Structure formats: structure tokens, C-alpha cells
Amino acid sequence: MERNANYDARAVAQPSEADWVASPSSGVDRIMLDRIGGGVARATSIVRFDPGSPFPMHDHGGGEEFLVLEGTFSDETGDFGPGSYLRNPVGTSHAPFTRDGCTIFVKLWQFQDGDTESIKIDTRRAAFAPGLVDGLSVLPLHQFETESTALVRWQPATTFNRHTHFGGEEIYVLEGTFEDEFGSYPAGTWLRNPHQSTHTPFSDEGCLIYVKVGHLLAELGTLSDPGGRSWPAAQHSA
Image (cartoon, rainbow, N blue to C red; front, side, top):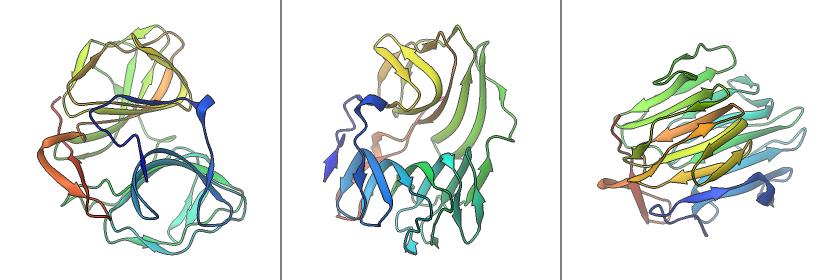
């Protein structure tokens, strides 16, 4: 299966276009944002667990990164409420479940070779630092070699500098409305800007976004998916 599999193309998924698809596990549904592969895939998804739903014990063959959007996600290591950011590297395993239901933003099979750090951050309690322009504050979540992931909070009426995405940029809007010259992106929107694309982002309303940069450039190597295909390794410049 392929969805938004051309990383040279800009991709946008608005919440009004959400299409929930049942997963193989009962009580677990997902919105596929990008995907290459079948049952085991390189994928970016929104996953919704009904109350009381377990997911079978599984190994993270290609690593797992996720951010809890609503409810409480649990596994044998603990309970993780809204705003929890976790990275489970290649070779780890768990049996997730939820008592009251939860929704997560999750990325699978997107770890670079050598990225072996387990991360657990409660972003609701963590301190943001001032950003590059007035009105922006940043909470770094993860960095490995040239890939960088953060939460960025925009105060109302904030505009960022026009810039080029060397290595690409991926955004999920958590709160408010993110904007640029190409459109307006309310909470629940996912967008991916390819390598060497350019824009001037702003927010009139203010917003909170998850953003990953530098992970879509093919020139410096590839990573393999479960079916033997490949996709760009991460690369970016500040």
C-alpha cells in the first residue's frame, strides 16, 4: 500500500478529510497520512484506541515515535497522558493498551541507523525556550545527526522568516491555526514540505505544532522498509 509516498511532492491532510480505517487489532482505528508497505509499513498515522483496547505485544523492527494527542496510552513501562512524547528504538518491544481510550500521532520504521536512544518526555511539564523570532518558543524533543524534532508554540500575529527546507519539513498542527502563503491549517492538519521547498509561515490566531526537519533528503543514503524498498535518509541544515 502507498499513500503520499512521493517525498518530492508537497502533501497536506486536513482534518475535514479524515478517513478512519480499522486496523487488524479490534478497537484500534487509524488515519493513514503517509505509508509504504502492507501490514508492516513505513508509516505516519493518527491511531485511535477505543476504551479498554489492547494491542498485541510487538517488536519495533524499524523503531516507533509517537505523541499522545488525547487520553492515556499505557504499556508495561507506565501511563502516558496528553502531550507525552516517546521514542522506542529498533529492537525494543511492548504490549500497549488503554483503559479509557486514547489517540496518538505515530511514525513507524523511520529511525536512522545508529539512533538507539529511548526518549520519554512529558511536554506539558517541560520548559519551552525562546525561538528565532519574537513570538516563537521551542521545546526540542529529539536530534540525531541532521534530523531534528520539536514542538513550536506561536503567539498570535507571529511571522517567521522565509526559509528553504533543506532535507524537508513535516508538521502536525496540535492547537490553533498554522498558516503560510499556500493555505491555512487548523488543528489536526498534517503537512509535509519536500527538500528545497520554500515558504513564509505565520499564525494570526496562534498555534502549537509538532515539527520534524531534515529527514527527507535522499542524497546522503537510504533506509530500507520491511518490503525491501527504500526512502530518503534524514539530512538538514539549520
